[in-house]
Image (cartoon, rainbow, N blue to C red; front, side):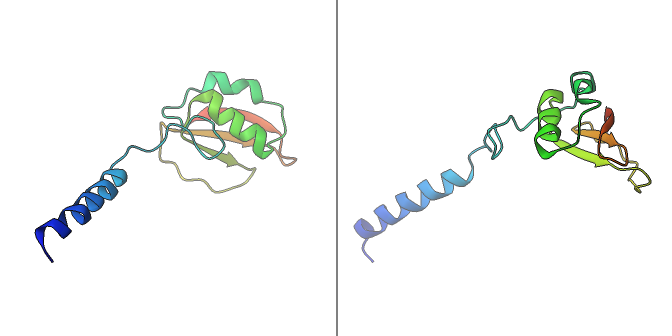
Length: 102
């Protein structure tokens, strides 16, 4: 190939690679903020509500957490602390009884 033919291909490759280096979007697939460090007090508003997907996601967004985990009665859970995770403890009927970070 001649140098003139290689230049457009090199430019295209550089553009494609630059797209791979872009930071992830600030919102998730639902448009809600992706989150970061968890703050449990704002999520306390969801205590007493049923743990539907919509409620769980709203609690995650309100807390600022990146992740959310549902803790059911008698469920084995890991003990590692994750400052980016909201833990929602539910009763046997699925009603949220506690919200805490970790």
